[in-house]
Amino acid sequence: MRVSCPACDTTYDVPDRLIGAGRRLRCARCDHDWMVRPPPGTEPAPQAEPAVGTESPTGLAAGAAEAAPLPAPPSRPKRASRAPAGVLGLWLAWVASVGAVGLAVAGLWLFRVELSLAWPPIQRLYALLG
Image (cartoon, rainbow, N blue to C red; front, side):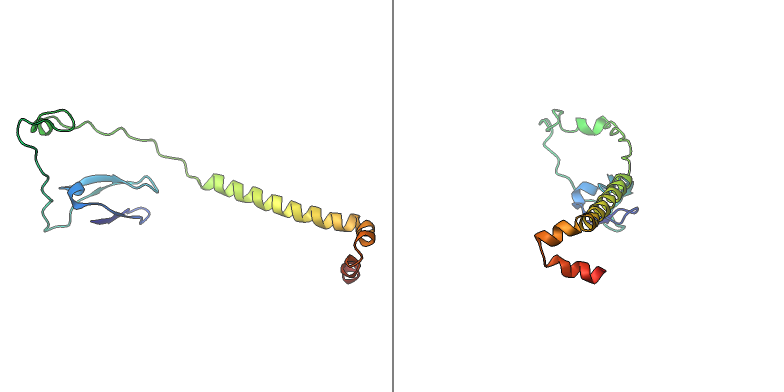
């Protein structure tokens, strides 16, 4: 079954056998929790039951797992949005880029005589700029 997060529209492929009569899902992208139910008119896929008296992977006898309800999963704290750190990094990158260009232009201007003596073709650039 293809399900999508109602908050951010991220889609997931979830096997029908895992949905059963209904299941709570959490979006990996935005941490939104929601309940997914099978479409109306479809029966939940039957799950294979182990033989009575055999042990399940949890160590309980078959049928004992249905009698004891599972504990609720611990709630995870909501993650802080990563946008502020990304925006700060972008601003720092822009400031560093503008600073590097500014230093290059200042170096070309301050060392124009030395650069003209060392590399004569740069004199054409200085002539164009005035």
